[in-house]
Length: 130
Image (cartoon, rainbow, N blue to C red; front, side, top):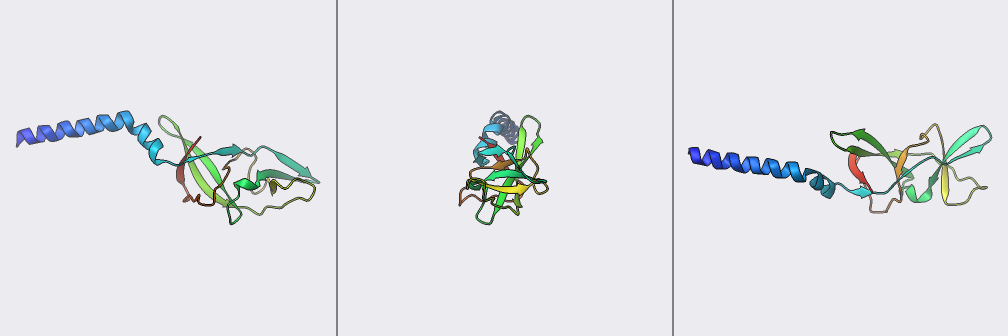
């Protein structure tokens, strides 16, 4: 019986060492990779200021996936939040962008771009930025 507990403790210790060494690789393997852009292009029209968002970043229902970050123990963690926007298309601008007021989304925010039609994230899901 005592020998069995030593074997169990040794296996548990071996598993702990294995997960410590390769835990980062396992996290990267199970977490989806996304490409992100930072929203920093603005357009002024009259008194209103608009953020330019590429149309390729919009989902089918007109939302964007905003990425929030948090400092983890040894790496930066990124979380996805879906945000529905009231965007406009300005006739004097090219057709590759939509425009959102700075009241809805802040300049400097990170969003996922491009968004594929099969891409779907739950609110608060972790991602890795390529």
